[in-house]
Length: 434
Image 1 (cartoon, one colour):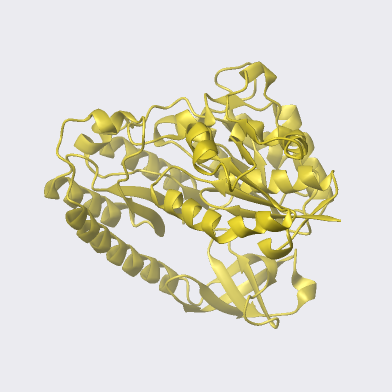
Image 2 (cartoon, rainbow, N blue to C red):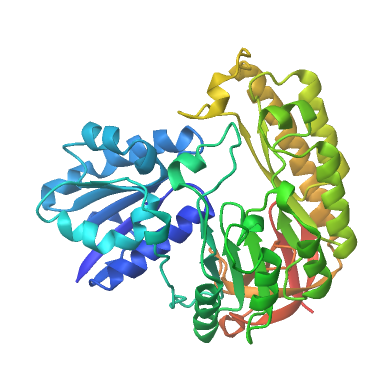
């Protein structure tokens, strides 16, 4: 029996790719292991959206390189492998046997087999017509599953390296998507998360369904209790998707809607193609269609040329929308992105760090207020499994994507139960079966 260990950095797309890699290698007899110490194959699935994952890669390779002495093979996958494949192949020539980009995930079995006789580098983009989405039919006992609906991105946000690491946008045929959802539901999956770099533009380049039509089609499938999706671009949030929040009870009351900045000047320089006012209109429309909708977002501070006034506008947007949570980061220059050509002096790292602390502190306060507001309310919670710390405590998520811990037994896993919230904390809720 061969064992594979996969370390994943980055976004949900990378998590999804890692799951696909495990499933595909399973067809060749590989079993996933929780430690690289007994693995025959060690893979790290990389991210390159920010600089920090690159440091993590170097550290990880340093930790596992000695396993090659006992015959283990080591590979680098993901976005960093795509844009820096040749340099990684050269830099780690004594440590790494395989480097491949996201387009080659469907071919991972063949690539691994080739490493038995040679070092392998595959980071070319496949022709869109030749790209084959991997069909997933195993849930591994989980109550929720990701289903990819597209790959790549056609947007040209000046800070973003994704178009260079995942290629141009390709929509997956809806028939394949619906077949995969059916198979997962048959395996016990109750919650489906549709994923892509910009799901709202699904199908617009083809004769396929629109994204809204896809949501309705998935909702019609028996056994689908909850539908989520990520990631959305505010520019492409149309009235048909807003209407879906009125019509589809399966569509959960949570949306991650990245805004990046509250300043029109910064949004223009980022090439986001919407204004602060337009973003607020979208938020208003969504909350009108689904009262109580929970919103989370992405924020970049310290983008080239950002002034104190620009940052103040981001802070006032945080207050006006009242985000329940956010992923916030200091701007990180990425190779090949248009932002590198901006003539402004970079924002001092010290200044960007101070702004990030201010933003995150206020976001934590707002998140706690939101969670405290839920105390005494009863939510339908989809039970995912036992707590990491106590087998007598179950955990699951509300329709607003908040994690709830409550006393319960394992027979509740996979079911939806009513839970009354007793305490709200910054990161989680605590409750009791209602």
